[in-house]
Length: 156
Ligand SMILES: [Zn+2]
Ligand SMILES: [Zn+2]
Image (cartoon, rainbow, N blue to C red; front, top):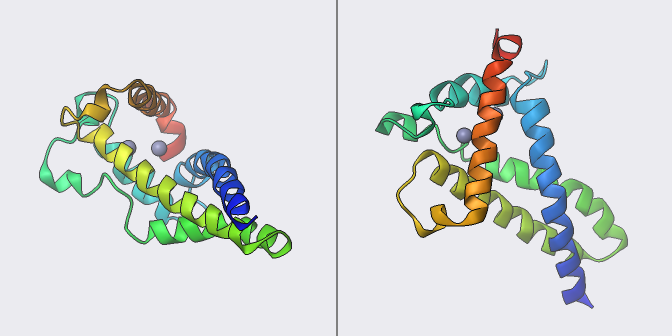
């Protein structure tokens, strides 16, 4: 049964994480929270100002490469935050549920950062020719465009 619970936890986290990512991006990364400005500054003011919806969407120099991924500590923070609701559930169900969710959160974050890196720094990888990458990249670039249209409302 433990194996089944970890699978359920894994699957539930994959679904949860995509909502979590969307919510964070919309409400934390593009809007400064009154008590915590770092995510907004790092993302909207630094990341999106370097990588725009023109040729600069692809990294132009080595210094900017460092601005593609989030700061390293965002990883553990986001993974632990995402696991919080799962911890509550696991106390009632099974700790294997939490283990599965934790594994999925780590995998999700790693894959997210890797795909995001590939989007800004293309290198003719096999992955970049896959349909799913194409869709993700187009939606990421579209978000940048939408944001630029409404930028004045957001960043000024
Ligand atoms: Zn953004
Ligand atoms: Zn980006």
